[in-house]
Image (cartoon, rainbow, N blue to C red):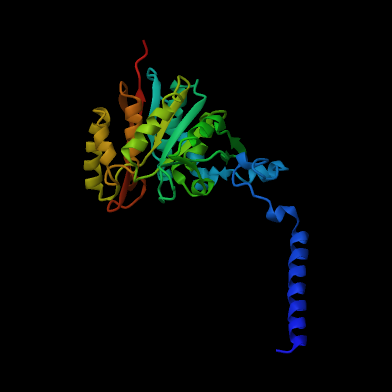
Length: 317
């Protein structure tokens, strides 16, 4: 190859390098700086500070898109609060299938009626889409509902994240209705409460579940309640679903944790979380509040989802 050709190739290479350098400078430092994947990253580990509230708000999840707002309003308007004596509720199970919005409103109205002192709520949701890379996932950015920011208990979440079984994954929560569907109802009755959201993998090892019980024990104080987000039987005929619910109801009353550890979607979509709750509240009494089935909300009787909502209460001295 002639010398002149080599010279031309060398000049071309230098030109390309120069163009790359100019382009990088044109993009500026923001192009190469680490980006915030959560509010907690802002100003940390080389991530630039989130300069405006709009940038910070963009990291929150709008929970109102997970349900029809008309259903939310009607659910609260048509639900009457109970008038019975109030037990000392420490936890509960509530559906996340917003087809039964009336049951969600009834659950949170009853919780607030008997526990107006609650300042923190821990929510355990199933990992519906099996996205978590660790046994448990959480996130600190939080939600919005009706334009209001829902506070996360970031201090407690940071403590949980110190454990190797817990990961932070904001992307997972953007599509996880197991928690987001509850937030608008929770916000209506507990507007100032702090939330600890936890997604639980279906393929959970017993040692990891036991580890979560140990982590949650110091957090479940007198002003904290634990909510298990769970629909019950899935995709069964109406007759079979109702039969299975009777088995599940008996296991709840008898505190049969082993049943829930091995339960599949024929009985509940969040059995491991119920196991955790029953282990946390060994001396509690279960009370069923609501029972229903999707076929009674204009769903097909051949392909149903059922709901069993209620509370764990502990006797006060």
